[in-house]
Length: 632
Image (tube, rainbow, N blue to C red; front, side, top):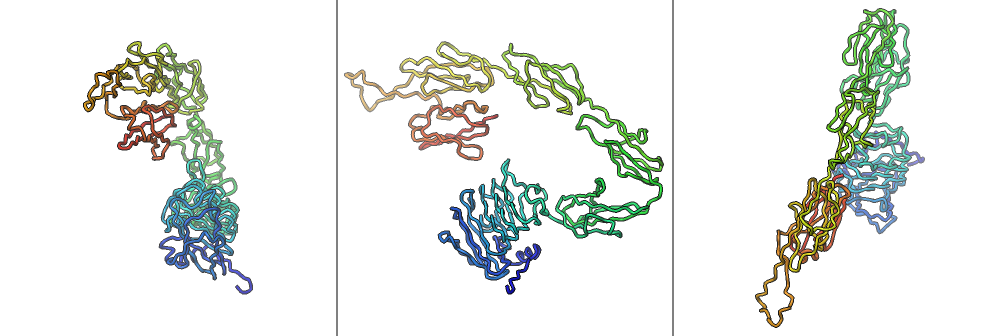
């Protein structure tokens, strides 16, 4: 422009200009840039990333971005000129190692949805990958407004450093309600060094205190002041803007002989807003609408009485006339173990409901002192079987001592004690708890673990690791070799147990007594009808095969195991020929592969973290599926 004078557009005019700029952009919600100065050059710097990006100046004719020309620049010739961007990057746009960054030579305003770089339209609501828009506008110090972040579901670090260094940025709108994915943030340094007087538009449920600079306004609305004494109102101006849920604070200079009357009403809902006196200032919380604040001065009678309270009460009035109703609010101290017993007005007990009561100053006609009396709450102490205490009730100040039975002679061990369902450890079968840690009725229960017996049928079983065990413990044993022409069949209760060498066996202990039995089965010889027996070659070896005892199947022992235990996957009666060139795949509940075993053996031992798992054995002609659960 002539004279080097450049117009400064307000946020409101920029947004209006962007909204009315193109019906195409409205329909498809493309990422849109509007030149706020003449001759704005737009570029993309790549850090080894080459996402699919197209641009258009009319929203109809599109040109693919050529990454083979690293110094490509697109020029907007005049103020108000538009350009649109979109992409097809459903698997993700950037990572923390491979990313791109926009550059602008002069002032520019962004609008539309950043998600058009993902689906080409700006409709998708979920970020596809971690670091998706990493550093996309980093260092763009001429960017005035940001495009809408329309995604509702985020990924880790997806907006990290997104607008870092955008020192002119003053406006941003987001749709997400939580920027954390578990314990991982999605927005690290995303608004670092942006302009101090900005505006954030977001869902009211978003905890915005961490997502933006402390000086930015959040979903701002206006306070209009209605009063006949404007000079008496301090620390607030008519038409001032405040963020959603911000504390609006102001003071009012009193007039001798007058009482101050305050009211705040939402202009849209017409709902009254509570105003509180905090020391010398009045406060109320800003709602999601404009507010009309009325400050009036009412002539009061000359006789004024003083009202004082103790530390546990508050009143609606600190001074009152003989015509006033005084309301008393007592604190609820049940969370500290005390309940309200009495409220006194000038030493006289008065009736109350829950924590509230009131009285007329016309009944007192004197200065008033309000006091309270609380009493400790008696909580019930309940004990389960094998637990003993000497008391059945206690207050928050008491310590509860208890004992539990030693049942080791019954092959039962003490795992701990549950207090209201929470397990704690104790020593020497004695414990002490402080009621101040609970402030509630208490139930004490002992938790024991039972040892179950392991028995065998004869001397065929040798070197057994346990004769008693808890559920989930690994039991190992050996059996004597079978005679020639026979093979062993080993059972744990009614469950057949397999072994790779027919000698060494193991399983996870059941939640009951266990009996191990062994049978021997004769190996059936192959028929050889097509080849007559040569009597001169009686010693020739005859091929043998195992007589099938059950259908081919997959078993898991135990079906529910604890974290850290072995899970035994038994491929029962599945021939070696089937296992050759096969795969055993273990997946979690989300379908993600956890482990792949090529050419598995008949017995596989696995140790996995807690969770529900699914498995499948894939051979050349069959699939065998199974699942199992591991608990903490």
